[in-house]
Image (cartoon, rainbow over all chains, first blue to last red; front, top):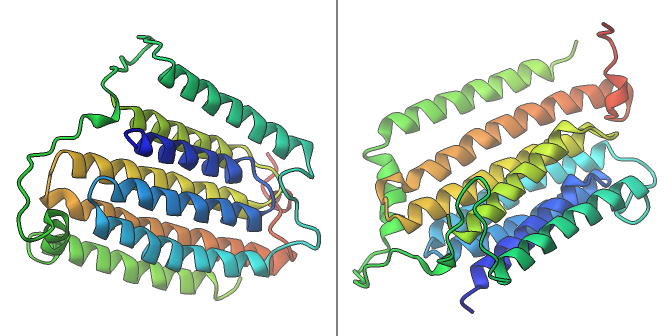
Length: 174
Length: 98
């Protein structure tokens, strides 16, 4: 259980390999959804319950749904799965070998100072002060978006509005 | 450097390589772009939560907002390409011949 975050991050990388080896986009979307779920689990292990919910609700529930509909619009008759094409399968296998080598390197207690020094303290260096208040501090930080981050709200709201106008102009036609 | 940052950096690099090396669909490159945004979100969230930077907790949400803008723009371009050619194959984008 000590290594649960490392296991989840390994599954995260394997999910990324699933869509970066580029099968047909509908299967790539499946890989991204799996990676999004595992990423939510990683964030929740650091007491980030609100940010994990944001990943599921906004990222997967909003953006991936839009990607799914667009893929359904522009897809082909026989989509390529990971095992049906040697290039896709080769990329996936090379990535899996890389990840297995990393796991062996980490869990085999091999210390190496290549370019960046990876210290051997691992994932249990979590800065925790052991005092539990009454509110989740991360939810308080996010809600301060509306008080200290008022200028951020204005800028992002304006950029979203301009984005909508730009998209309407692009899709108006040539 | 903690172990999880190695995997996050690897995930970002794998997505970046997937974005830069086309196969046939433009949609796959957009998915790799979204993957890059997801790995950056998770890295940012765990750094901020581990160091207890409470006021910086809004930064991952702002990053998701801009990632949504960028994804929507990419999708609108893909829709226009698909309207012209029927499919979103990258080999159709050949008007500029240097």
